[in-house]
Length: 232
Image (cartoon, rainbow, N blue to C red; front, side):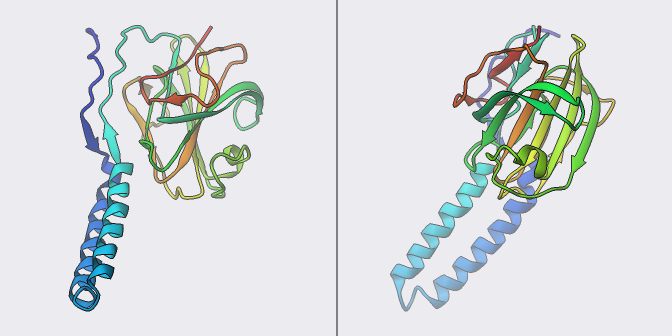
């Protein structure tokens, strides 16, 4: 594989937003047409205010589905765990992971606000060992118990160094759909999309205890760019 391309700043809209944006625009246009013909002639200020508010709301939704094209710029990715999402690091701690490992793991959690890119990237090269979806609640994604009680999708990847890494997409209070593209048996590669979570959520990464972490609490991450950790 030749020299990786440097970061590209081209941005497109994610395919997961196609239906939402089309139907949203139809509703947006219909409501504004009704207000324009029925309300604006009587009270122009109300009509203009309604148009302004609905335009801002629609643009926020469009912004949510943006999908920047990114390429990790270093060829040597062995042992690296790259941020799977844009957001803020809200947890770095040892925890009991009782779904797959049933032992102590180092958990790093990234919280995505409504204004972050919500595409999720594969955090490491390797082979997909397990993919499992769990139904659950829709509590605020920043709560610690959301990782095990909310709707979530769990992916386990075996890296080229032989480590099993668990990545968990967690729904939030507003999230109502988690999409995971990886399937068991797939080869996984940095630069590829792992999935997408709609409207506010978090991604948890479970690493072997003793892994060197390269981020700090409160640090902002950029998906497919920020180095989260280096495996021993």
